[in-house]
Amino acid sequence: MKQVISLKDVTGLKSSGAKTFTAPADAIVTPSAKDFLRSIGVAIQFDGTAPATAPAKPDGDGYYGGPASPTTPQWKPEHVRLFNSPEAQRIKEHIVSVSHRLWKREYVDGNGGNVSVRIGPNEVLCTPTLVSKGIMRVEDICMVDIEGAQIAGTAKRTSEIFLHLEIMKANPKARSCVHAHPPHATAFAITGAQVPPCMIPEMEVLVGTVAKAQYETPGTKAFAETVLPYCKDHNCILLQNHGVITWNEDLEKAYWFMEIVDAYCRTVVIASHLGAPFTHIPNSKIGDLLKIKQTLGLPDERTGLKEADYCACEFRPGVVCTNPDESSASAPDLDAVVKIVTEEVMKALSK
Image 1 (cartoon, rainbow, N blue to C red):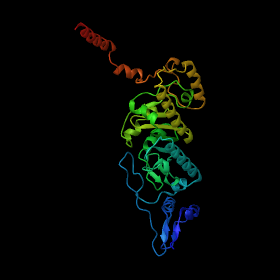
Image 2: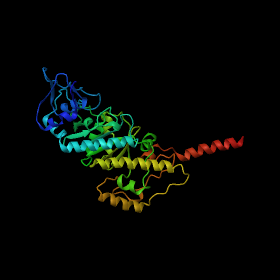
Image 3: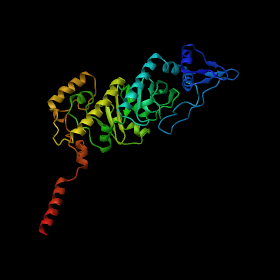
Image 4: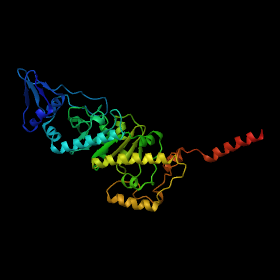
Protein backbone atom coordinates (compact mmCIF):
# COMPACT_ATOMS: atom_id res chain seq x y z
CA MET A 1 0.00 0.00 0.00
CA LYS A 2 1.28 3.45 -0.88
CA GLN A 3 2.21 5.69 2.05
CA VAL A 4 0.09 8.84 2.40
CA ILE A 5 1.97 11.82 3.83
CA SER A 6 -0.35 14.41 5.36
CA LEU A 7 0.12 17.85 6.90
CA LYS A 8 0.44 16.23 10.34
CA ASP A 9 3.49 14.27 9.14
CA VAL A 10 5.49 17.33 8.07
CA THR A 11 4.64 20.09 10.58
CA GLY A 12 7.64 19.16 12.71
CA LEU A 13 9.98 20.30 9.92
CA LYS A 14 9.19 23.95 10.62
CA SER A 15 11.54 24.04 13.61
CA SER A 16 14.08 21.52 12.33
CA GLY A 17 15.76 23.79 9.79
CA ALA A 18 15.66 21.03 7.17
CA LYS A 19 15.75 22.09 3.52
CA THR A 20 14.61 18.78 2.02
CA PHE A 21 11.90 16.26 2.94
CA THR A 22 12.54 12.72 1.68
CA ALA A 23 9.61 10.43 0.95
CA PRO A 24 9.27 6.90 -0.51
CA ALA A 25 9.26 6.83 -4.30
CA ASP A 26 5.59 5.81 -4.51
CA ALA A 27 4.32 7.96 -1.61
CA ILE A 28 1.30 10.23 -1.96
CA VAL A 29 1.80 13.72 -0.50
CA THR A 30 -1.45 15.54 0.25
CA PRO A 31 -1.96 19.06 -1.15
CA SER A 32 -1.98 20.60 2.34
CA ALA A 33 1.36 18.94 3.13
CA LYS A 34 2.82 20.20 -0.15
CA ASP A 35 1.56 23.72 0.56
CA PHE A 36 3.06 23.69 4.03
CA LEU A 37 6.47 22.45 2.82
CA ARG A 38 6.52 25.08 0.10
CA SER A 39 5.62 27.84 2.60
CA ILE A 40 8.61 26.98 4.82
CA GLY A 41 11.01 26.56 1.92
CA VAL A 42 11.40 22.77 2.11
CA ALA A 43 11.70 20.79 -1.13
CA ILE A 44 10.18 17.31 -1.49
CA GLN A 45 12.57 14.55 -2.58
CA PHE A 46 11.28 11.12 -3.50
CA ASP A 47 13.73 8.23 -3.13
CA GLY A 48 15.85 7.94 -6.25
CA THR A 49 14.86 11.34 -7.68
CA ALA A 50 16.09 14.92 -7.46
CA PRO A 51 14.32 17.30 -5.03
CA ALA A 52 11.08 18.66 -6.48
CA THR A 53 10.81 22.41 -6.47
CA ALA A 54 7.60 24.39 -6.45
CA PRO A 55 6.42 25.76 -9.82
CA ALA A 56 7.11 29.38 -10.58
CA LYS A 57 4.36 31.72 -9.45
CA PRO A 58 2.58 34.06 -11.91
CA ASP A 59 4.07 37.45 -12.70
CA GLY A 60 0.95 39.41 -11.81
CA ASP A 61 -2.81 39.63 -11.98
CA GLY A 62 -3.31 42.57 -14.30
CA TYR A 63 -4.04 45.03 -11.54
CA TYR A 64 -2.31 47.91 -9.79
CA GLY A 65 1.03 47.20 -8.22
CA GLY A 66 3.89 44.81 -8.77
CA PRO A 67 3.68 41.07 -9.26
CA ALA A 68 1.28 39.09 -7.14
CA SER A 69 4.20 36.88 -6.14
CA PRO A 70 7.84 36.51 -7.13
CA THR A 71 8.83 34.30 -10.05
CA THR A 72 11.18 32.34 -7.77
CA PRO A 73 9.54 29.56 -5.71
CA GLN A 74 11.53 30.49 -2.60
CA TRP A 75 10.56 33.33 -0.27
CA LYS A 76 13.14 35.29 1.70
CA PRO A 77 14.08 33.51 4.96
CA GLU A 78 13.14 36.51 7.14
CA HIS A 79 9.68 36.61 5.55
CA VAL A 80 9.24 32.87 6.01
CA ARG A 81 10.18 33.14 9.70
CA LEU A 82 7.68 35.94 10.29
CA PHE A 83 4.97 34.21 8.25
CA ASN A 84 5.34 31.02 10.31
CA SER A 85 5.80 32.69 13.70
CA PRO A 86 3.37 32.02 16.58
CA GLU A 87 2.13 35.62 16.34
CA ALA A 88 1.39 35.24 12.62
CA GLN A 89 -0.37 31.94 13.29
CA ARG A 90 -2.62 33.59 15.87
CA ILE A 91 -3.51 36.40 13.46
CA LYS A 92 -4.14 33.98 10.59
CA GLU A 93 -6.59 32.07 12.77
CA HIS A 94 -8.35 35.33 13.64
CA ILE A 95 -8.54 36.31 9.96
CA VAL A 96 -10.12 32.94 9.17
CA SER A 97 -12.60 33.36 12.04
CA VAL A 98 -13.64 36.79 10.76
CA SER A 99 -13.90 35.45 7.20
CA HIS A 100 -16.25 32.67 8.33
CA ARG A 101 -18.41 35.14 10.25
CA LEU A 102 -18.64 37.46 7.25
CA TRP A 103 -19.94 34.55 5.18
CA LYS A 104 -22.35 33.30 7.85
CA ARG A 105 -23.81 36.81 8.26
CA GLU A 106 -24.26 36.96 4.44
CA TYR A 107 -21.99 39.99 4.17
CA VAL A 108 -20.10 38.26 1.33
CA ASP A 109 -20.96 35.79 -1.40
CA GLY A 110 -18.94 33.80 -3.90
CA ASN A 111 -15.33 34.78 -3.28
CA GLY A 112 -16.19 38.37 -2.34
CA GLY A 113 -14.69 40.47 0.43
CA ASN A 114 -11.20 40.54 1.94
CA VAL A 115 -9.51 40.88 5.33
CA SER A 116 -6.03 42.16 6.21
CA VAL A 117 -3.85 42.75 9.28
CA ARG A 118 -0.56 44.62 9.39
CA ILE A 119 1.87 42.37 11.25
CA GLY A 120 5.09 44.39 10.83
CA PRO A 121 6.35 47.76 9.58
CA ASN A 122 6.32 46.47 6.01
CA GLU A 123 4.38 43.20 6.21
CA VAL A 124 0.62 42.58 5.93
CA LEU A 125 -1.28 39.29 6.21
CA CYS A 126 -4.34 39.05 3.94
CA THR A 127 -6.93 36.72 2.45
CA PRO A 128 -6.30 35.24 -1.02
CA THR A 129 -8.16 35.75 -4.26
CA LEU A 130 -10.85 33.36 -5.51
CA VAL A 131 -11.46 31.61 -2.19
CA SER A 132 -14.86 31.75 -0.47
CA LYS A 133 -14.74 33.22 3.01
CA GLY A 134 -17.04 30.39 4.07
CA ILE A 135 -14.32 27.77 3.53
CA MET A 136 -11.24 29.88 4.22
CA ARG A 137 -8.36 27.99 5.87
CA VAL A 138 -5.30 29.15 7.78
CA GLU A 139 -3.16 27.68 4.98
CA ASP A 140 -4.82 30.03 2.47
CA ILE A 141 -3.59 33.24 4.12
CA CYS A 142 -0.96 35.24 2.21
CA MET A 143 1.57 37.90 3.19
CA VAL A 144 2.38 41.01 1.15
CA ASP A 145 4.65 43.99 1.62
CA ILE A 146 3.21 47.46 2.10
CA GLU A 147 3.30 48.06 -1.66
CA GLY A 148 1.32 44.89 -2.43
CA ALA A 149 3.97 42.46 -3.67
CA GLN A 150 3.40 38.97 -2.28
CA ILE A 151 6.25 37.83 -0.03
CA ALA A 152 4.88 34.61 1.53
CA GLY A 153 2.06 32.10 1.23
CA THR A 154 1.08 29.55 -1.39
CA ALA A 155 -2.26 31.05 -2.45
CA LYS A 156 -2.34 34.20 -4.59
CA ARG A 157 -3.17 37.38 -2.70
CA THR A 158 -6.34 39.35 -3.42
CA SER A 159 -6.04 42.13 -5.99
CA GLU A 160 -8.08 44.40 -3.70
CA ILE A 161 -5.33 44.38 -1.06
CA PHE A 162 -4.22 47.77 -2.44
CA LEU A 163 -7.41 49.34 -1.07
CA HIS A 164 -6.39 48.14 2.41
CA LEU A 165 -2.77 49.23 1.95
CA GLU A 166 -3.70 52.80 0.97
CA ILE A 167 -5.67 53.11 4.22
CA MET A 168 -2.83 51.61 6.26
CA LYS A 169 -0.27 53.97 4.73
CA ALA A 170 -2.49 57.01 5.22
CA ASN A 171 -3.52 56.18 8.80
CA PRO A 172 -1.05 54.39 11.12
CA LYS A 173 -3.92 53.40 13.42
CA ALA A 174 -5.53 51.39 10.63
CA ARG A 175 -3.71 48.10 11.20
CA SER A 176 -6.71 45.88 10.40
CA CYS A 177 -9.16 46.26 7.51
CA VAL A 178 -12.34 44.39 6.60
CA HIS A 179 -14.01 44.77 3.21
CA ALA A 180 -17.39 43.16 2.50
CA HIS A 181 -20.72 43.66 0.73
CA PRO A 182 -23.33 43.69 3.54
CA PRO A 183 -26.70 44.07 1.77
CA HIS A 184 -28.30 46.90 3.75
CA ALA A 185 -25.26 49.17 3.84
CA THR A 186 -24.48 48.35 0.21
CA ALA A 187 -28.03 49.42 -0.67
CA PHE A 188 -27.01 52.92 0.41
CA ALA A 189 -23.82 52.58 -1.63
CA ILE A 190 -25.73 51.83 -4.85
CA THR A 191 -28.40 54.52 -4.41
CA GLY A 192 -26.16 57.42 -3.44
CA ALA A 193 -28.17 57.94 -0.26
CA GLN A 194 -26.16 59.07 2.74
CA VAL A 195 -26.33 56.91 5.84
CA PRO A 196 -28.20 59.27 8.19
CA PRO A 197 -26.59 60.21 11.52
CA CYS A 198 -27.99 60.88 14.96
CA MET A 199 -30.46 58.06 15.50
CA ILE A 200 -28.79 55.27 17.53
CA PRO A 201 -26.15 55.95 20.23
CA GLU A 202 -24.00 52.86 19.52
CA MET A 203 -23.68 53.88 15.88
CA GLU A 204 -22.66 57.42 16.88
CA VAL A 205 -19.99 56.28 19.32
CA LEU A 206 -18.43 53.40 17.40
CA VAL A 207 -18.87 54.41 13.76
CA GLY A 208 -20.36 57.89 13.46
CA THR A 209 -20.84 59.45 10.04
CA VAL A 210 -20.19 57.17 7.07
CA ALA A 211 -18.19 58.58 4.18
CA LYS A 212 -18.97 57.81 0.52
CA ALA A 213 -16.13 57.12 -1.93
CA GLN A 214 -16.74 57.51 -5.65
CA TYR A 215 -16.84 54.49 -7.95
CA GLU A 216 -13.73 53.12 -9.63
CA THR A 217 -12.94 49.70 -11.08
CA PRO A 218 -12.11 47.33 -8.18
CA GLY A 219 -8.48 46.27 -7.94
CA THR A 220 -7.11 49.33 -9.71
CA LYS A 221 -4.91 52.12 -8.35
CA ALA A 222 -7.75 54.61 -8.87
CA PHE A 223 -10.07 52.38 -6.82
CA ALA A 224 -7.57 52.15 -3.96
CA GLU A 225 -7.11 55.92 -3.88
CA THR A 226 -10.84 56.74 -3.64
CA VAL A 227 -10.69 56.29 0.14
CA LEU A 228 -7.75 58.62 0.80
CA PRO A 229 -9.84 61.75 1.61
CA TYR A 230 -11.64 59.86 4.38
CA CYS A 231 -8.96 57.75 6.11
CA LYS A 232 -8.23 60.17 8.97
CA ASP A 233 -11.74 61.12 10.15
CA HIS A 234 -13.72 57.92 9.55
CA ASN A 235 -13.45 54.21 10.25
CA CYS A 236 -16.15 53.17 7.76
CA ILE A 237 -16.54 54.06 4.08
CA LEU A 238 -19.23 53.17 1.57
CA LEU A 239 -17.65 52.22 -1.77
CA GLN A 240 -20.03 53.43 -4.45
CA ASN A 241 -21.72 50.55 -6.32
CA HIS A 242 -19.47 48.11 -4.50
CA GLY A 243 -19.65 47.63 -0.74
CA VAL A 244 -18.12 48.76 2.55
CA ILE A 245 -14.67 48.89 4.12
CA THR A 246 -14.01 49.33 7.86
CA TRP A 247 -10.79 49.49 9.86
CA ASN A 248 -9.25 49.75 13.32
CA GLU A 249 -6.04 48.88 15.13
CA ASP A 250 -7.72 45.65 16.25
CA LEU A 251 -9.21 43.20 13.74
CA GLU A 252 -12.13 42.25 15.97
CA LYS A 253 -13.22 45.88 16.26
CA ALA A 254 -12.88 46.41 12.52
CA TYR A 255 -15.27 43.48 12.09
CA TRP A 256 -17.63 44.91 14.74
CA PHE A 257 -17.93 48.12 12.73
CA MET A 258 -19.09 46.10 9.71
CA GLU A 259 -21.83 44.47 11.81
CA ILE A 260 -22.84 47.80 13.34
CA VAL A 261 -23.13 49.73 10.08
CA ASP A 262 -25.18 47.03 8.36
CA ALA A 263 -27.51 46.56 11.35
CA TYR A 264 -27.98 50.33 11.50
CA CYS A 265 -28.75 50.59 7.77
CA ARG A 266 -31.15 47.67 8.06
CA THR A 267 -32.97 49.41 10.93
CA VAL A 268 -33.25 52.64 8.94
CA VAL A 269 -34.65 50.80 5.92
CA ILE A 270 -37.22 48.95 8.07
CA ALA A 271 -38.22 52.13 9.89
CA SER A 272 -38.76 53.94 6.59
CA HIS A 273 -41.70 51.58 5.89
CA LEU A 274 -43.56 52.34 9.12
CA GLY A 275 -45.09 55.60 7.92
CA ALA A 276 -43.98 57.57 10.98
CA PRO A 277 -41.38 60.36 11.02
CA PHE A 278 -37.89 59.61 12.26
CA THR A 279 -36.81 60.99 15.60
CA HIS A 280 -33.25 62.15 16.08
CA ILE A 281 -30.97 62.36 19.09
CA PRO A 282 -30.74 66.08 20.06
CA ASN A 283 -27.54 67.85 18.99
CA SER A 284 -26.59 68.54 22.61
CA LYS A 285 -26.77 64.82 23.37
CA ILE A 286 -24.71 64.01 20.28
CA GLY A 287 -22.03 66.22 21.82
CA ASP A 288 -22.03 63.94 24.86
CA LEU A 289 -21.58 60.90 22.63
CA LEU A 290 -18.71 62.52 20.75
CA LYS A 291 -16.91 63.09 24.05
CA ILE A 292 -17.25 59.39 24.84
CA LYS A 293 -15.94 58.63 21.36
CA GLN A 294 -12.87 60.77 21.90
CA THR A 295 -12.01 58.86 25.08
CA LEU A 296 -12.07 55.66 22.99
CA GLY A 297 -9.66 57.15 20.47
CA LEU A 298 -12.10 56.78 17.58
CA PRO A 299 -12.19 59.33 14.72
CA ASP A 300 -15.16 61.51 13.80
CA GLU A 301 -15.29 64.22 11.16
CA ARG A 302 -17.64 66.28 13.36
CA THR A 303 -14.97 66.92 15.99
CA GLY A 304 -14.60 70.70 16.20
CA LEU A 305 -17.87 71.47 14.40
CA LYS A 306 -20.60 73.65 15.85
CA GLU A 307 -23.29 71.75 17.71
CA ALA A 308 -25.91 72.76 15.15
CA ASP A 309 -23.98 70.89 12.43
CA TYR A 310 -23.79 67.51 14.17
CA CYS A 311 -26.95 66.19 12.49
CA ALA A 312 -27.03 68.17 9.25
CA CYS A 313 -28.46 65.29 7.21
CA GLU A 314 -32.15 64.72 7.97
CA PHE A 315 -33.07 61.40 6.40
CA ARG A 316 -36.42 60.87 4.76
CA PRO A 317 -37.31 57.89 2.55
CA GLY A 318 -36.53 58.67 -1.07
CA VAL A 319 -34.44 61.73 -0.20
CA VAL A 320 -30.69 61.80 -0.80
CA CYS A 321 -28.73 63.85 1.71
CA THR A 322 -25.91 65.95 0.30
CA ASN A 323 -23.33 68.32 1.65
CA PRO A 324 -24.24 72.04 1.47
CA ASP A 325 -21.65 72.71 -1.23
CA GLU A 326 -22.95 69.78 -3.31
CA SER A 327 -26.59 70.81 -3.05
CA SER A 328 -25.91 74.41 -3.96
CA ALA A 329 -24.09 73.35 -7.11
CA SER A 330 -26.59 70.78 -8.34
CA ALA A 331 -30.03 71.62 -6.84
CA PRO A 332 -32.63 72.95 -9.30
CA ASP A 333 -34.00 76.51 -9.04
CA LEU A 334 -37.13 75.83 -6.99
CA ASP A 335 -38.74 79.19 -7.82
CA ALA A 336 -38.37 78.41 -11.52
CA VAL A 337 -39.89 74.96 -11.07
CA VAL A 338 -42.85 76.39 -9.12
CA LYS A 339 -43.40 79.00 -11.81
CA ILE A 340 -43.44 76.41 -14.60
CA VAL A 341 -45.84 74.11 -12.72
CA THR A 342 -48.15 77.02 -11.86
CA GLU A 343 -48.29 78.17 -15.49
CA GLU A 344 -49.13 74.66 -16.69
CA VAL A 345 -51.89 74.32 -14.08
CA MET A 346 -53.39 77.68 -15.08
CA LYS A 347 -53.35 76.69 -18.75
CA ALA A 348 -55.21 73.49 -17.94
CA LEU A 349 -57.84 75.34 -15.88
CA SER A 350 -58.47 77.90 -18.62
CA LYS A 351 -59.42 75.29 -21.20
